[in-house]
Image (cartoon, rainbow, N blue to C red):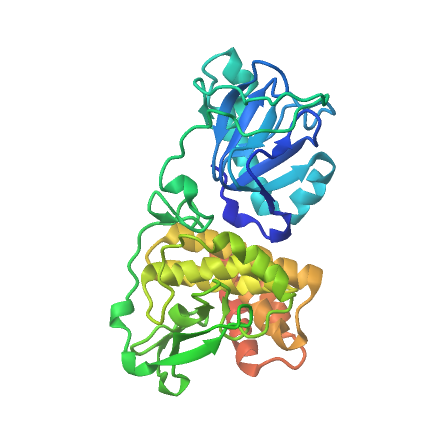
Length: 420
């Protein structure tokens, strides 16, 4: 199953009503991933005796063998209900891989996994890239009498009964009891929310800039913060409170989410945000009220990552900040693997923002320090010292950050000397 949460450009997402031919004879030959819903794969779809050989569902990938060979599609993929997909046309594949490297990696990984799983028979081998489940009991779609050369697409008369409740859930609904925006390796955690000092928290009322409804969320009182310790990567720990758990705001009405300092100022048209959030509205199953739970803390971060591309222009920088903070939350939860995976994604987005779209001059020194820390976390000493040196020599930078960068550069040189 493909991890669909890695997609950056939500504008690629397409809605399909029941009976829509997604790819096949007479339509564009496309590769696609299912974000929501169910899709049937047919042979001889427009002929008598059509057979549905596969049933695909959320997270499944389909690519016709002829896609990259300039051949007509051998199979026809038809939505069995209202579905949401991410289609990729043949002429768009190179651009797609450049724009969505994380999702492209997920697709390649899925294909390699399938190569390691031998097909049950010759029929399976021919359709091995169509999905995970082979249907042997489905009847061909009914054809209405018509004089047209090609009949209109129809939902198969014997479409399989949906599994409940998972098949009817939205992309962010629990699948097998799990919030669907959570990546595959996300575990069950328990953050120390019960230990947070309520005297340092306050209820704050917000007006959502997207749906204009009001809601209340917990916020940290800055005047009450007392630093207890500082990590070597400049993470501050405070007495009785962890502000990270309260930094993401989620509107419980429309699910628009962002870091609290940019929540009120989305940069893209509200209509685009509303359209993207429509697929998240039903059956979320998580309470985003004033209180906080471990699940709502993590879900808030992933919703903010989902919203970033449709709400903000330089969304890579927004995503990098979210992922860097999220990696620390995973560290608090004791999951070193997810902490590292999320830190790598933060590094990728920071580097993209720094080298491709530019960063505000006032933030350049800080971002160079963060990139240096993330490289150091990956034990890449060469690139780490490069960015610490950039931070150290940044014009008009903070003396404190300059001092930190100098200390880190010295530590790295000592580490490199010890390895010799």
